[in-house]
Image (cartoon, rainbow, N blue to C red):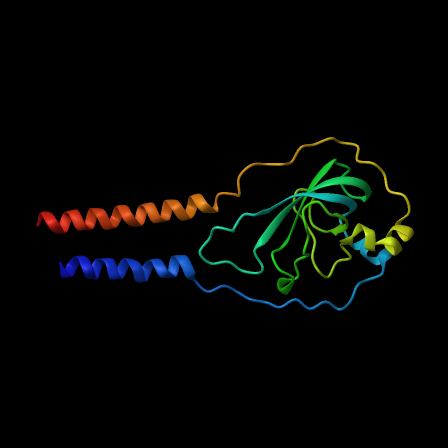
Length: 186
C-alpha cells in the first residue's frame, strides 16, 4: 500500500509541472499611436469589419495567461490594404495587460493588422478602433473597396486544447489504475 501511495504522490508531483509550469509575463506599454499614414505603411492589412465570432482556444486549460491568443473572425465591409476577402481572421492577446485589443462580438472596427495573410495580428498599440470612433482615420484613408473574394472562415469548436488535456488526464488515470492493479496482485 505504501508503494501505491508513493507512486500516486510522485505522479501528482510530476503532473503539476505538466499542468502548471511557469509562464513568461509582460506588461503592455505603447509609445503612443502612430499617425494614420505611418500605420498604413507599416501594416499588412487595413480594413473595417464586424466581429462575427471570438474564439478563446485556451479557455478550458488549467493555466491561462493574459497573453493567450483570441481568434477573431471579422465580416469585412471595406478594405484599404491587404487581402480582399469577405471574412478575415485576426488574433490578439486576451487582455489589454498583454497589449490585446478588447473587441466585442457584433461591433464594427477599423482594424490595422500585421503579419502574413493567414496569421494577421492586431494589438493595443495599433490604431485598431471602434468604427464609430475612427472618423479621423477614415477621412485620411479615403474610400475603401468592397471585398472581392467571398469566403466562409467560421469554424466550429474551440480548438484542440481540451483534447490534449483530456488525453493527458486519461493517460494519467490509466497509469494509476495499472499501477494499483499490479500492486494489488502482488
